[in-house]
Length: 114
Length: 110
Image (cartoon, rainbow over all chains, first blue to last red; front, top):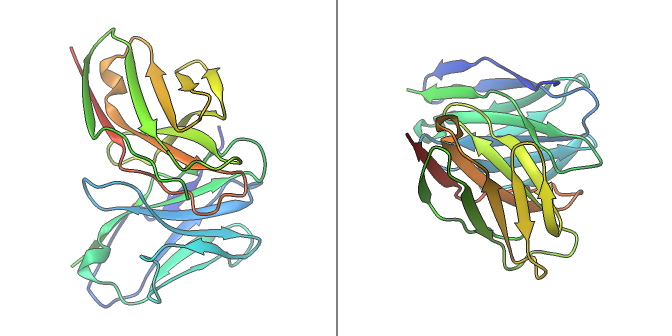
């Protein structure tokens, strides 16, 4: 089965630094998502991206966050100035434009902000 | 957006059938119901999707009553490897804000 790939698998950064989390969604998918999961908690929606623009975002996705699809294949999440509370597992997901609402998730990037 | 409510946790034993129910009282006409499984440190994995009545695949069944205000995921003869968190998610095909609920932590014991 095709896979969503995420890099890096682990990222350690200092508070206030910028980080970019990278994702390669499945090639023929049209909808792209970022989720995060703080240890022991539920999966939280951050943002969805369709037709080269943000379609929805949650209240978590404030001005410190941005997403980009720079080259038609990669999908990135940037956190401009990281805070301690940004420490979490970040998951990228994608799905086709039709058929089932089947989200394909990557294996995640564990972000630790020190 | 249809909010979902599930039990926080459930225990079962190997070989038993497990039924996990999700409430979604304000489900919209165009919404579908999907269920995901998540193991620690992994992304959620799609299990099954339905709109109404019953759907069955190789791993689970999904029961949806006529009013669609709830759904039940049925796992036949669970094994230890089915220990995971199970999420129901409600949304339509144009769904952009696909939001997970709290999930049900299933513990399968020997």
